[in-house]
Amino acid sequence: MTEKIPIGAKTFLYPMPTVLVGADVEGEPNYLTVAYCGIIHAVPPMISIALGKPHYTNIGIKQNMSFSVNIPSAEMVEVTDYCGIVSGRRIDKNGLFTSFYGRTKTAPMIEECPLNLECTVRQILDFDGTNEIFIGEIVEAYSRDEYLTNNLPDIEKINPICFSMHDNRYFSLGSYIGKAWQIGRDYKKP
Amino acid sequence: MTEKIPIGAKTFLYPMPTVLVGADVEGEPNYLTVAYCGIIHAVPPMISIALGKPHYTNIGIKQNMSFSVNIPSAEMVEVTDYCGIVSGRRIDKNGLFTSFYGRTKTAPMIEECPLNLECTVRQILDFDGTNEIFIGEIVEAYSRDEYLTNNLPDIEKINPICFSMHDNRYFSLGSYIGKAWQIGRDYKKP
Image (cartoon, rainbow over all chains, first blue to last red):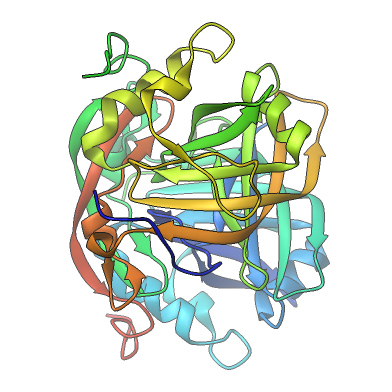
């Protein structure tokens, strides 16, 4: 093996998800493309999203203390990317999708996305840097029969977008390589 | 389109990363497989990991207030899965890998993983539920020339593992589908 080299303190995590975060801003649905998103708690189910501080969406999340995480399919990569380029301050992104609401009544969700997570804000973290971190509790998830297998979301049917940060590339999901808590059960070091 | 249906409040995020979290526990390196991991801050670079409270690794993170996030390649799926099945309380997982240290001197990293993030703990969150959430600042990242393109990690060379939660399946990365902040630039709603 060649030697390990320090490559700088940067946000190198692979793969990252690609989601559309939804919030009502001044009463109108707005959607922002986000890769800083991760599950942080099992029971209750909680998720974190981190948004650059100047974003329009942040205003709406704080107004309603709710937001949505919508998972687009790879077929939606162009509109997904577009939502990360244009600001809701200039463009009505609501018109790009059909929005629907769930239990919170204030977190708009995208009908066209295979999977939607409806969240209420549990905490907002601010480390005096570039981002605001919204910690949300997932109060309900929504999908359609065509994306489920055994009543669970099927990642192959959802066909999500994988993101590579810093070189800014989108990828599709690849092939099944093994069952978790099983494929390694009998592992022995060679 | 068929109708949206509520599918329950669960941690449905796709794809999730698959990482090995490292910490010295009682002075010995230990590694745990984790999918609850996400970037939460750009500058300074910060990452969150969430571990079930009973895990052995948590003890070491708190002892040293440091941890590592190691990204295994798909070729390492068996040993990666194994590290999520067996506890460091029973099995010496250090022996599975060659460990190295960086600036913190206390966050062990895995030589065999294409990419390593060395982190110091900035905050620990506890929502009185199943998990402890460790928010880390990435103080350095490490890789090898063979995994870089233009001095940045190349996700295709790293070949990371994508995780599908709840049905517990590992997937490889698929193919390139577009450039971010570019492919959607001229998007028009059909």
